Image (cartoon, rainbow, N blue to C red; front, side, top):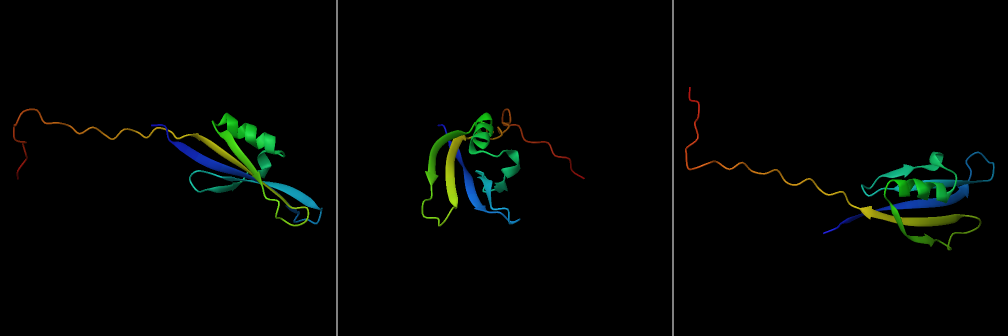
Length: 106
């Protein structure tokens, strides 16, 4: 059965820390629970979505939070991709016949 893993790309417009007005910040929430600032990898949502697409991610939904005051913006891009198949469990070795095991005694 096909299983999925999910990630979230968040685009946030917020007040700049250097008093130059506004800045756009991108944060990636990975399927492993990680949270990474990926702003340095591109300056548009399309750049980040294309990069995610190259890694096998598919955009499944987009949402915007209109409740934020002022010029703040918050966009969420929901992504999914097939979960890598887990390695099969190791096979157990079967003993041939009913021979007892040899042990080294000392």
